[in-house]
Image 1 (cartoon, rainbow, N blue to C red):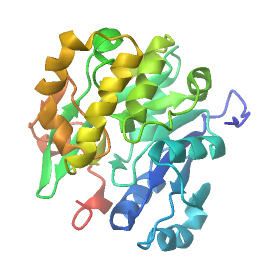
Image 2 (cartoon, helix red, strand yellow; image 1 turned 30 degrees about the vertical axis):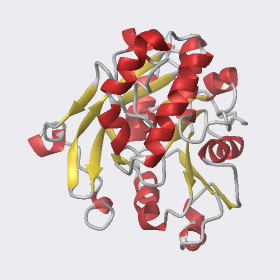
Image 3 (cartoon, rainbow, N blue to C red; image 1 turned 90 degrees about the vertical axis):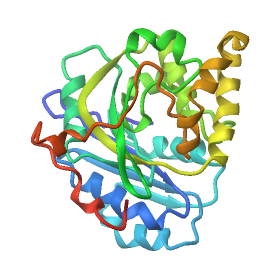
Image 4 (tube, helix red, strand yellow; image 1 turned 180 degrees about the horizontal axis):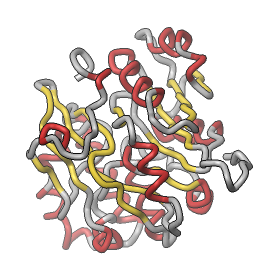
Length: 287
């Protein structure tokens, strides 16, 4: 990764890295949500793993809105994230899956949360959507529980994490040996390195739920992450099992958030609070 070298008076450049494979059905929604951020200094880096469904056509058509894109077979999401990180120029890096999307002020709120603090990354809540529409709000685990609980579960939604480049350089790249839990492993290493998080209030973005197969793989990989950091699994199997329902519904990573969790209350914008709108480009066929 190489930074921008901007003047201290300039607002920081934020890079958003998106891996995609055969994601034409949702990619426009993802791209629009980055392009329409209310923060000016954002670049979008998209790494395609060799799609055959029209994804590449979308990327070609929208190339002028992207800082970098590439399409070639790769070893999975972790490898794509690492390739994107090498191309990213920002001082703050966000991670957005191709089937997820940001609120229009997500980046500006993340930059504001980090400004003037010693925090290394942000975290917050996401809205969860299924085939029938909005399901609820998924909230992060409070940070006082991270050193212990993050060994067993991903404690915050990955798309709410905007991480300083310096922190990413300290912990190294995503583990490409993990097919669907490299975000969890990254978080564990951030905490182990003494990195600190700062919350972003309100909903930061939106995730879609998927099938069970990848979630079962994620559960096995989470066990492996816990073992690799010396966690006593015989005492904690109940934690995995207790959140299995959340594991099953999320296709790209685990979302069992312990003392955080799933809240089926209406979104803030549905209650009329905060003045934020749901990203309008995702109404209809995207969700």
